[in-house]
Image (cartoon, rainbow, N blue to C red; front, side, top):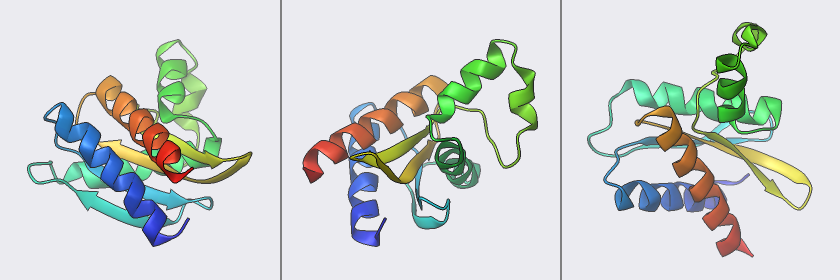
Length: 131
């Protein structure tokens, strides 16, 4: 995951958030969970920056949307809450090209389902644009 690619994902996330008048922080991490880029839209609460990073790391560490972890926890799988460096909340989404995960996007600022939907939309549309 390079900076240019990560900024393309951030731009798609901002467009998706703007469309529903949401204010979010967006983080991109590489396949090792290292922060590559972070942007906070105007009007977004400061705490959302750290949450966006944690959601992206959760997604890349467990190779799935972070919403899956939230749904498992809500479904009674309380062990999810004990996993290291995990934020079981919607808004993290893996970025996969071919069969290789290159990183993840984390997004925070809205409710869990809103964040989850925005993250998925941003990754999906950015991947389509990259083809």
